Image 1 (spheres, rainbow, N blue to C red):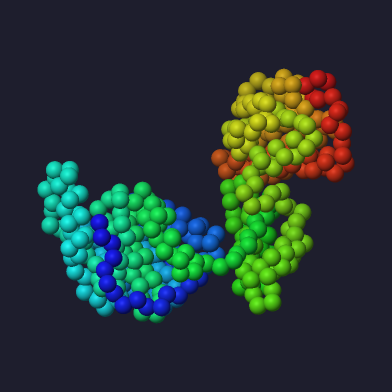
Image 2 (cartoon, rainbow, N blue to C red; image 1 turned 135 degrees about the vertical axis):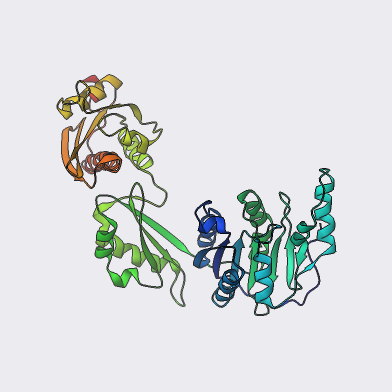
Length: 415
């Protein structure tokens, strides 16, 4: 399949910013989720490319054309996914042609390749599919080895670029990785960017934002942003170099400001999970743990995943025999039964619209207990109870590590 045709070559510009457009009415009516844009945005951000915005657009020519024109006025690269099929409502090519003020025409080499795809499967070739063999003068076809829709690479006179890719991820992904990305990298792709993520617990996103302050959150460099995740509130700090200031020095200053504001709630960094963080702390002491949950639906066990340090876990309902026993007794029993250094117990009880979370841990340091109120009841309250159990164990381990509590004390299971 021939993928290039002669055209005047504009001076390429480095790709420092991008706009992502997902095209297809199935996205705007909720029938299909746009996973492509999220995947591409993560890759671009990690490469130091600023994603100005992401839009999902219906199959309306005037809407797609206006979005393309607006994006080209803003970003170095506009990347579209979807709308490259053979039917009349697949309008990405038409929209690009209108923005570029060029007339699409059937490319003979693409048409031959396309017809061959049908011939080798002994399927009649619908003439409507010739639309997928269109090119405009400023475009180059992006090979698609997994479908019938070649992409478009369009060089604009000002050095910007339009990249049009098919919607199915199984087609989009190899075209991006194998063809588009190397071409982008050759012209200068992204810039140095250093990021650091702080993972917080015991504080809501609005309270985090209040502590950080508007000045820090609105700064253009470094960019400091908060995200409410299922297992934490994240603060992500991202810095790029400036004249006479390295990205590392900019990031370090911002990190210090974040820690001064919310450092007492930080339990992990970057890709840390509760399981990995607790595992590091337990390994340092040479300890392991066993868990019993009451009324949580097993939320703490699900949160901790298949942690190698969790020797046993058990979940019981609030009306089961033994559920009302003192929590320290349940924790001690869990540790002894599993032969674990630590026995951890958590109980969730709905109280009005919220959930009371009771916590107990028995280990070489003795017995630790706590209780708190988790926002909301039902499944959300139970989920938060699981996080509370992980945070409770983390606090205990940090105290033990700071006190250098001996790991040679007898384990819970042998007491």
